[in-house]
Image 1 (cartoon, one colour):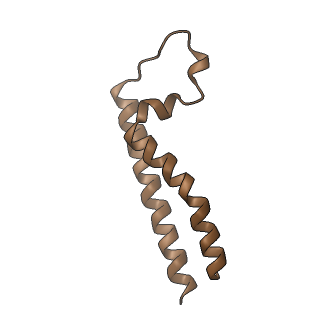
Image 2: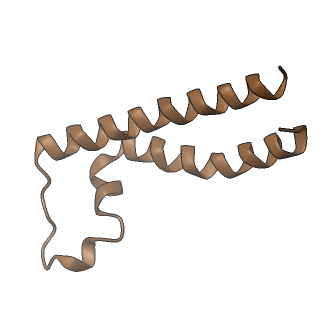
Length: 77
């Protein structure tokens, strides 16, 4: 992978990281984003759903970071 391809990959990953960080910091808001229309009243999420949403966001951040680092490492090999 050349430098321009890495640059484009990193540029495209910035919004993905932003959404994942938002999902970790504000799990209720990010979980209900685009789903509020389904409820007449403001729904309350259980602690398990909040915990799961935070863990999935953190795991996705770690996996994407590892894949990005491996891609950068392989491009300079």
